[in-house]
Image (cartoon, rainbow, N blue to C red; front, top):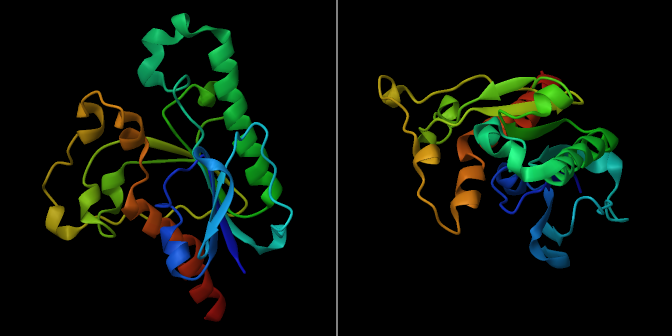
Amino acid sequence: MRTVLALYSKSDTIVRPWIDAGFHAVLVDLQHPEGEHTEGNVTRIGADMTEWFPPKWLVKSDVAFVAAFPPCDHLAVSGARWFAGKGLGKLAHSVKLFERAAYWCEWLEAPYFIENPVSTISSYWRKPDHTFHPWHFTRFFEGDHYTKKTCLWTGNGFVMPDMATAPELDGTAPDNRIHAAPPSDERSDFRSATPAGFSRAVFKANWTDKVAARAA
């Protein structure tokens, strides 16, 4: 069965369009219960990505797409005023988490993106290949009419979807819900949530449109 992977991903939002199309999705994150748990065509693996290896049953040639969301707590430039107090250990760990994402994305040889906000990775590695805001893809989901500049490092033939905004929202300013979110236990997950519209646009560009092009 064709497979898609989401690394550092508690939510299945980015792979939901692929799941609905019959793909097997593998989600790896520390927030999943420890071990490997499969329900239907979704496998959730609770693991530390610095120690994770793809399961033996995963056939590399079957992997169609990979998305990775390494934690940005100690890399995002929005938190630059706290960098000096975090120490080298936290910085090194965050860079290691990003490096593991890049390593496995390249190794799996499937189209991929690695997502982070505007961060110091641009200085440590290279500038992102693409940036977007959730509101850029409201034609796929109008509920994503908000701002959050997001960077993508991509490879292995990843296709960045074209901007597709909902005509009925033209002239309406996107809101600032991410930066305005009040402190809470769920704030981190809320701020890092993957936009549904972007997820659907990525699926269309990297599978639906490619299949149609090959058939033409």
